[in-house]
Image 1 (cartoon, rainbow, N blue to C red):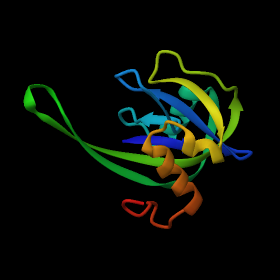
Image 2 (tube, rainbow, N blue to C red; image 1 turned 90 degrees about the horizontal axis):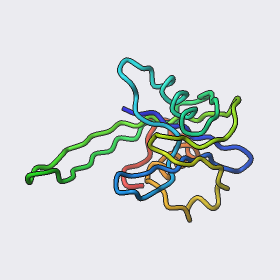
Image 3 (tube, rainbow, N blue to C red; image 1 turned 120 degrees about the vertical axis):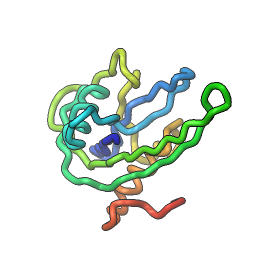
Image 4 (spheres, rainbow, N blue to C red; image 1 turned 180 degrees about the vertical axis):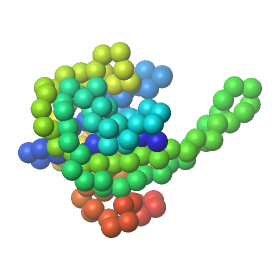
Length: 145
């Protein structure tokens, strides 16, 4: 389980740059994994602060993204990963933009909404923007959309 924030201000989207194990970097929504017994609301507040320096207030639960990935592991085995990602709309209430040190991201920045399709990004960015734009009553985008 993880929780992420869509923060749009003045036509710009707040993103954090995720650093993969192989060293590649792609933009993602601020957020991440829930700690044991942590409420998802608290998760998105904590993670946004860690990754961007901003205090945020979730204002709406936009939806849930369910992902499943199968990938190879050592000795010919495979991992079967299933993740649930809660996506909140959030607004910045304080703090100052800064980059995370020693975490899973190395940079935070605002990006004009019309330039987001040009960025190297994870799929969650598109899912989050779709939820933010459409606000589906059932809290999910159409499969494959």
